[in-house]
Length: 496
Image (cartoon, rainbow, N blue to C red; front, side, top):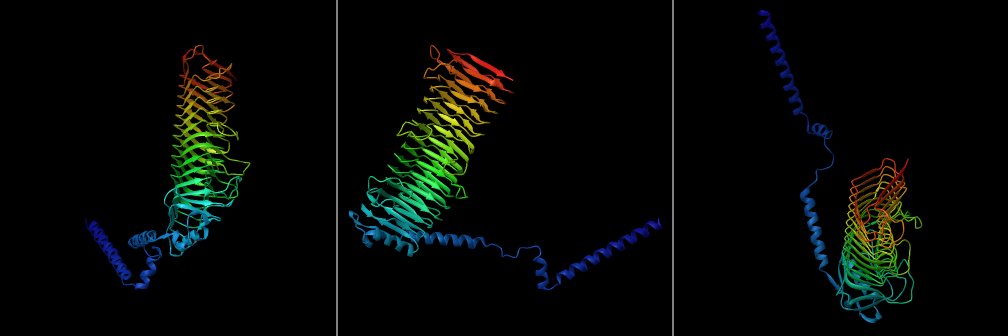
């Protein structure tokens, strides 16, 4: 018992010594000099001062207020000698007003109704400048060719609105300097709205971002209606009307000479009529959305996604084509290239095509040449040749309605890893040719064909078979497919 008490006593003494040592060490640290303390803290804290969020917000608000005050400064071009009588050259007078706005840090340059004759391009070089007319009765008429009407060059937060830019000469040919409005350099944050481009289009060329082109009407151009290129980022093309464009109505292009791809482009709500090339073309770029546009009448394909090796473009990545109506592809003007409703070519990656109506085209409704394309819930109606042709591996066809096309509902040859599910093929082979099926699949391994419906209500039926699957079809899944109407013949002739 005495031994246990002695051990307990020694343990208590040891604990007391430990507590005393700890308190002494803490006191020494506390009594160190301020310099020594700072040197210890710098080992665990960043050297920079903490960010004052209140100061940042205040500076931002002050900058916005200054921008608002600048916008209130309106310069009348008539005060600088512009007349707008359709005879006098007003180039120097309007340019002087623009330059004055630039020197004062921004402002609005206003053009009353009139026809302003230009012999040279107007150039906006300063930030926060608005060039505004009284509507389309304010016309900037360029009488030299080739030349641009308005250039925005390395100028941020500029606006062009409510006026007409026009080509004032006839009998001239296309040229790459033929734009009505040309945005170039680091012209971030631009807005172009309510412009009538009469014989003149819009080009955005350069590594700028955050631009909007909306509610404009562009017609009778020699070249593209709207063209985006050379690394432009975050550009929206919204609710424009484009008629009788000399080349593509809207084009997004990334050339190999520029390493940076055009990126994050939204093309939505536009009405395109009678394009002398494609309605909308994505030829090199990344993250391009083509949504809710109406295209009626093209010389070539209604929508094209491609890598153009002839013009040395980059591939096209991540294209979404959704809720568009494409009519009469290939019916306008002289044939130039393929004449498909939607054309997806080799050299493109990750394309999704959903909820579109593709109708009344000269040739195929939908042509797929790119691997991993997803085609879902589209209506493909009354096109002159086959509704869909697949020339790529690992394509998904789901929930599409393919009806009254000239030849096959869908035609596939020599492609692998396809998934064809929940589609309806109705009354195809409207041309009445021999040996044409609603669905033809030839030499396709690792393919699933499930829950599709083939219909021919005509008497006599014009299709030879509802489903024709022939040649090599290793690991084929063919399940729960239905035939209705006058022709319910299915042929599975697989070779090993």
